[in-house]
Length: 526
Image 1 (cartoon, rainbow, N blue to C red):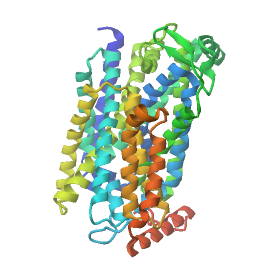
Image 2 (image 1 turned 180 degrees about the vertical axis):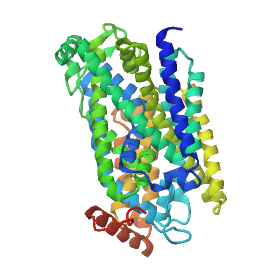
Image 3 (image 1 turned 120 degrees about the horizontal axis):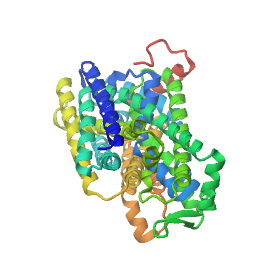
Image 4 (image 1 turned 90 degrees about the horizontal axis):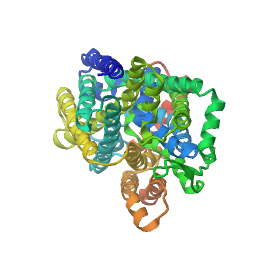
């Protein structure tokens, strides 16, 4: 066993031990279903902001994005531009209202403030849907798409363990997933959020350290730019024109990017309005007054991290004389090539942190949906909070096992799995939530139509486009458009109750008061 492997084992071991220790630390603070799902809505702005980042930017940031840049150059950065805009927009448009609305909306069954813990329960209460149809459909969307989303993280985890330790996928996934499940089961939302802060710091520092070392080795930015241009001029163009040809073992000319590719890349930003694991941070922050600080921290981290990830992709093109067989391994390969084994272990642990920080949040949301929107809503409406807590812990394990099966027996890349789930959530929930926050006259029928049409289009688009349309357009674009159309066209079939109107006005007033600073202490903190 060489020094590199020993160093990685040591640093990975310390990192994993710290994650479990945090889970044990917050175990006694997690005594109810509300604590497990949203941490009692007590996240401070720094934890909320960084946790939103860590739960969002998974292995895609450290593996998928650098790999895409490595293959096709700057043309792939349109996705990062779209994501930056969408992320900022979600903090500005959704965060304040979602924080207040999910807590204040009237319970459709018993009256009074509902303190909705999941998006599904919020939507049921927001639209006073006593049929439970809205809650059931949204829960199904959450569970189905999270199986694929968690699986994307496990594929990245397996690739990392193979790269570092030479482990086969099954034991690699078993080891990593066991740790994630352990601290998530122990501490729930608080454990996930506090570990996210450490993981976000590790990811950002690793993305900074590797480019600094590589740029020095390559003779500065000029050396990097010159080397990339030597491989192919089209790599530095924002509209593309080059791509890695595996058969040639070199970058070759391709068509420049058309509007379809650019629009598809930018459309990724729309997904932020419907990602339950990110929106949970908006719901869990302690006060609307804290959202400005949290959003500033979060967006600054996201923009700089994505810029550094794009830089990593270019550095990989410049640094390696022979093209890599697996472009998504460009970041790990640079780490091993540039650093001492002990340092390499620390930096590689940051990739594991990226994977785990998203997988834990997604497991938690999926398990919460199964418990709150399945067991509590349809089996035992008056279940004891302690009982729900333990059912949630059990469902974390069940979802983890199902996602592991998809990761082990599927054959898709990290980017493919993320893209599929991202479009599903973005189109299934994004238009519905945006209009639910800002359209007083929206009804349950409109919400159901938007979720069914948006989520259904995201599922079916690739099949239809491949066989009939041939546009190459990312599913997010038609799915979001059709979701908005369905909501507007069918909304009139439902009705707006007096409670719905009263809730909307009350939330609007509370959000305005909190933003202006005129609300008394505690009003926006719940």
